Image 1 (cartoon, rainbow, N blue to C red):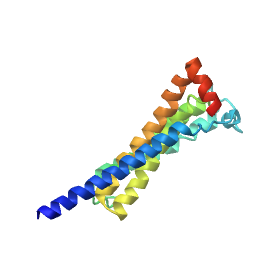
Image 2 (image 1 turned 90 degrees about the horizontal axis):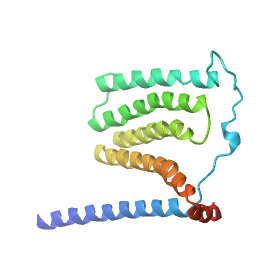
Image 3 (image 1 turned 45 degrees about the vertical axis):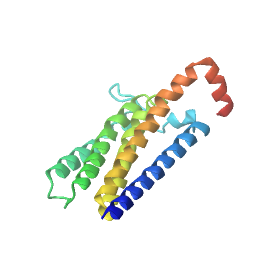
Image 4 (image 1 turned 60 degrees about the vertical axis):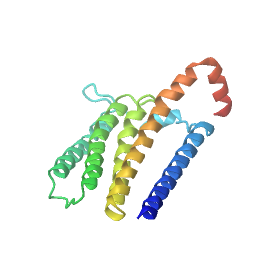
Length: 187
């Protein structure tokens, strides 16, 4: 009995070391590799027409279906029964997936109103939330609820950390002249 408890603690400690090592590797890679920069052409779209004072009208209004699907999916997922969701971990994953899809409608519309590097984050963050949630839902369904929920929180943490790194750290560091010159050599 004591031996089994000791083995479980050893396995749990090994898992924590593996996750900690993976996180440290990720942080190291984020610090030593250059940021993938967007081309200024990335923000130029084929249809740049204005209608009723809304710039890039078709790019903005085509996000409405994302809102409809996201809200309907979120409501139906939270009501239960329709999607045959049997585990609470699945509810979390699918609810966040549909919330990410609904958030994509707002983030993408905001970005397409005036496309630039400062707004692209609001277009990509809801996508990362949706992708992370979808992937973890598949893990819950195929592997197990506990591992799926762990992956959900880990993937969402990485998504938000990546966004914070892109938005805050790089803009802050590039505003300091000394660090800017160091980072220009690296980038």
